Each structure stands twice: as C-alpha cells, then as structure tokens.
Amino acid sequence: QVQLGESGGGLVQAGGSLRLSCAASGGTFSSYALGWFRQAPGKEREFVATISWSGTVFYADYASSVKDRFTISRDNAKNTVYLQMNSLKPEDTAVYHCAASSLRRSRNQYEYNYWGQGTQVTVSS
Image (cartoon, rainbow, N blue to C red; front, side, top):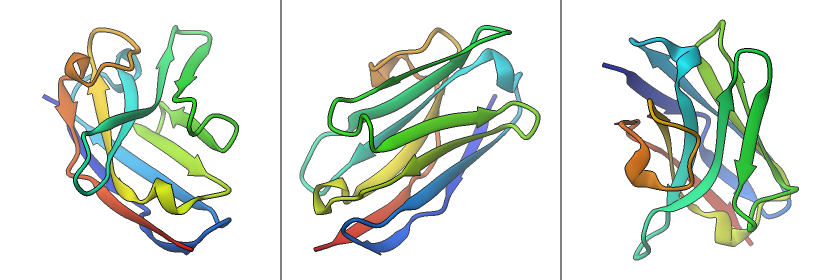
C-alpha cells in the first residue's frame, strides 16, 4: 500500500512558476511509475506528465499542452516526485494529483493504483 501526499500548490500570476511535490510512503518507491494528472472544474481528469526509473535511466512523457513548460522529476532517495511548472497559463488552473503505478509509465489514469488527495493550482490572468 502506497500513500501519496501533494504539496506546493497555490495562487500565481500568469507567466509565473510553481513547484509541486508529492511524497510517498509504503511500497518500493523506485519500482513505481509516477504520474501527475489534473482536473479543472467541470472537466475530466487529464494526464499531465509521467516518469519511470529503469534502474539506470529516467524516462518521462508529457501532455502536449505542458511540454516545454513543465518538468517532472523524481528523487528515489527521498521517495518524492516533483512537477516544476513554468510559464503558467490560466488554463493550467486545476487540482493536481500525483499517482503511482505498479504497472508501467502511462498516460492512462486507470493504470495507476494509488492517488494523492490533490493540491490546488490557480493561475490568474
């Protein structure tokens, strides 16, 4: 059983930056693929980014809407995954959730076994 807890959300002006963190406990952190998803009011939850660790190399994947603005990273020693968000836009406003998958790195939310409660990110114009 893996428990996930996000932090780092808040209110920021358009063009600003935020760094989200997600700390994990339980399980073997390095063996999980980790993802960030977001859900805006009235919209379905959508994929943002995912990262996995092969034992020697990190692999990451991004939604086209955030590529070149957001960076996902992980620190296996600290059992933490991060999402650095730069050049934020009002359309990035959402609750951001981290998730862990025992299966594989994926854009499909249904392949993730564990979820955090989420952290609110609000970008003002």
